[in-house]
Image (cartoon, rainbow, N blue to C red; front, side):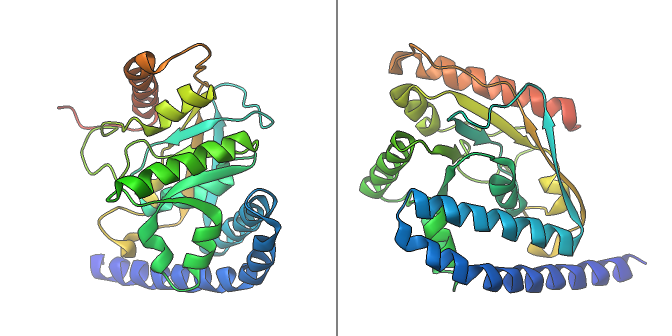
Length: 252
């Protein structure tokens, strides 16, 4: 019976990958046509088409996007969105959960993927963490996006959390930008993505609910870089406690 389930899951994952590429090819021409309109207007259209792509793909593979609002969310306000990161299935909720113009910080290595790399380059602010100058350039691009009325999205853990704890340690970047740009932080929790696809393998994708939880925004008015450690700890504790409300973690 286990072998049958594994075989079905493997076939389902292959089907999901095929439909992912098919929908990508459908939206690809529209994304390419959006690029000449510039990083702001064109980039907003790219995100719009990526959102359509995500909704269609979810329908085809039986995944339901859900949103839980613990506090009201102002879609007309700019934010530094931060979220936990534990699965490749954290990526679709970025475009599905942010309802205002947004740019995400993304790994440079993904641009090497054929066709998808073009879309990825147009949709995110690229970062090469191995190169100090490139990393600094990425953060200048994020600040420029904020100056043009666009929110930004960052995974403060940097990479997958492969521990048994709710979160890994946070990097300073998101909180430094929030303070320097005086832009509030909006934490989001992805509470089902590990169930949908474990970080250990692409071939354990499962259908079902994939929810995003909006936590209360964290204001940064008047904060300086001296307050960065306190701000980072505050957001970390808020997200950790939030994850513990929705997910059962093993007792240490």
